[in-house]
Image 1 (cartoon, chains in turn brown, cyan):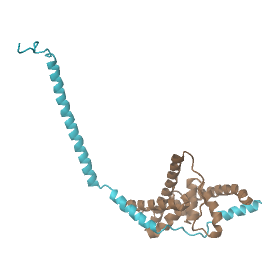
Image 2 (image 1 turned 30 degrees about the horizontal axis):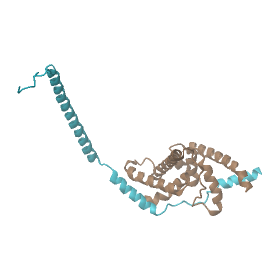
Image 3 (image 1 turned 120 degrees about the vertical axis):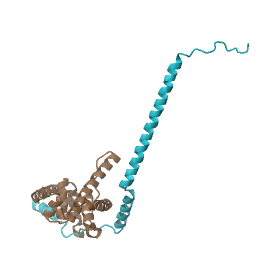
Image 4 (image 1 turned 180 degrees about the vertical axis):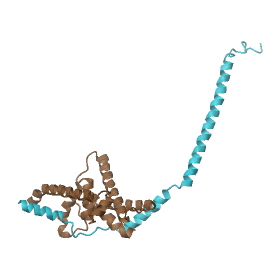
Length: 164
Length: 99
């Protein structure tokens, strides 16, 4: 199970939390949950779908936990994330990917999930819909809105980039 | 200008194409195994849980019993005090016994 899914779980988690330490923590959390709840899995969905669903929830919880912790610790909102370099991205595209992940980070949860599963994990739209427990149409709509929001975020950063 | 901007945005949006999945460090598997082993040790089994619940219930019952006994005894003592309080007059008015 670990051999089959660890890359998928880790890569998905990394796209949400944007740092390797937290992604490992999420991966650990996911496999502990899989082990503890394997008996409850009723086979209504594919195992992969079930594991992705656990991963998305664990990653979103990790982000919330971190925001809460930062708030309690410093009494202020979350500081800007450091620049994130995805280890799987081609070197010549790494600068563009940094900006894209920065823009993805600002998306609402559902749009972020639809985008990460579709364009980072490259899952078929129907599987994304199954993971998110929604319809195919809803996923397509979420992706449209996500792309629109990403475009508007990137537009804001374009002049800044041109000055360099 | 606008065309350049749109081209740049399209390029950024497509920057994940052809990328590979990131892989966790090999040590993570050992870490997860340890976590699973530890969590198994922490699990309280149902028979153990029943034993603990029975012991707690017994302790509570014994305490209630002891408390009610103590209350009864105290009640009797205070009744005695009330009854004898009327007789608080000194039995001896003269303590000079050897005169």
